[in-house]
Image 1 (spheres, rainbow, N blue to C red):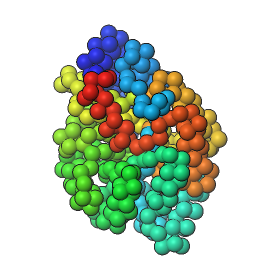
Image 2 (image 1 turned 90 degrees about the vertical axis):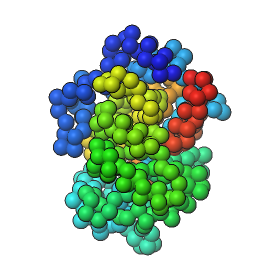
Image 3 (image 1 turned 60 degrees about the vertical axis):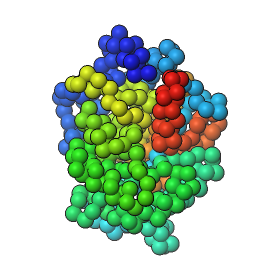
Image 4 (image 1 turned 180 degrees about the vertical axis):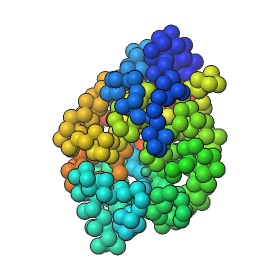
Length: 351
Ligand SMILES: [Zn+2]
């Protein structure tokens, strides 16, 4: 598939440059977290999966199992477990959520505290998904005291994650601030999570969506990850390289593909709230447009919803995505299951 994609796309300079993110090799601006922002991009059609549409029309992609029209990949990043540490945290996640009108974070926190539940209702999220025939992945930070944005030890959440994995949900690594560019930090955090889970960790998403093109993909490959699902803009939903299908990233410096699968992130809840400043009603209008665009070319829409947004109007919006997906024949699953299936199709020569 890679060679075929390469040949077809190279013949179209614009699509090849978008697919390989040429502009990110010499960025004119990176933010304080080293992120390439949509507002500084030459790409002006983020809601249009233009590369995927083009490849779909050439018949490049496998059909989904059980006659599904398209896929919605569901995921949750676990940034914090405890109200007090979260509130006093330098990142001020809760205060930012409040400024965006997301009262749900506090509601969920206070309910969790009353019940003495430190785990942000991860089991409840799985229950809600199960009722709708869906599964998802939970990416957990695995930091230690003294590391930036340390709010909990992975041992505090290990039992819950193991229960979720036993139920068929996925646990992956939510890399801390340095993991995207520091191989030592990346391996250290991966080892901590694996020690707690007792199984290999193959999926990754970076905290704050920090990412370096193409370096992060190389680091992840060398550390033994099978797939990444970080690659979207923090400040705008949509398709950062025009793809709404899993793909093999290309290293323009080395002139070769990097042997890892990217399951591109398209929708992060906090992008809608904090960067795009949408209310839930307008956010739905945007999400529905993305879902329909993805369905048209039998692609994948990857959604990141933080556990603290599972209540109130934003929680309702998450359910609406699941219900809309069910009504439109979407495969509702986590990035790990999707990636495993996708790679098996490639290995079988079907793609
Ligand atoms: Zn995070």
